[in-house]
Amino acid sequence: MLRALLLSAAVIALPAAAAPALAQEAAHAGGHAHHMAPRPGRITLSATGEVRAEPDMAVLSGGVTTRADTAADAMTANSRAMNQVFQALRRAGIAEADLQTARLQVSPVYDYSQNREARITGYQATNTVSARVRDLGALGRTIDAMIAAGVNEFQGVNFMLENQDAALRQARLNAVAELRAVSALYAEALGVGLGRIAEFTEQAGQAQPYPVARVMAMEAADSATPVAAGRLTVSVTVTASYEIDQ
Image (cartoon, rainbow, N blue to C red):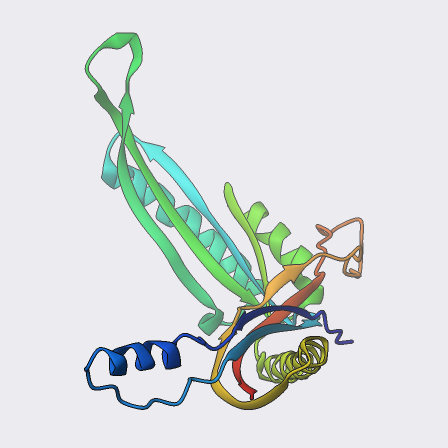
């Protein structure tokens, strides 16, 4: 179910009244003054439209860190461990196209003890994989499979909308509806009429998590890690500058 949360702000710029007086002073001083119509005042309004939607996909990030006396040995041990992780993810139903190496690094390990000059005591290899889980019902079991396969650095879950076009469209409609309502409110309160829109901008935000107290149902809740999917918030902020009718 989609719900809208709408916010707004306003900035008002009134026309300058000094231009005709300055023109008259220039004429009296013998100068040449060009007649210029006063620029219409403007009222600038912003409104935000938000839509909350349940995610339909999640990205898991986790990997293995290994240490050894040499960089080659650290990398060899890491490769063996990561092969187990990749196999576990494939068995969990993750497609090959949804698996991606996110980080691969080998670095020395230094000893800074006893106030002596740092010395290398070994090497550390880190390999991190990102896995897209399209069946959220299997998310807890997939996390368990990664840990059981040897993941010792689990970096978390990122819930997503695979296609947020519909939510983004609704957020835009909500933002414009709020903008129209707020512009009418300010026009009435100020006792002015609003003319054409001189400027219009949009700022769309990426889907952000919105926590709710709901844990996804698992086939066996006591045998898989429970994961709260919550909801995502898609937001759009629009800003318009209206000319004030004289």
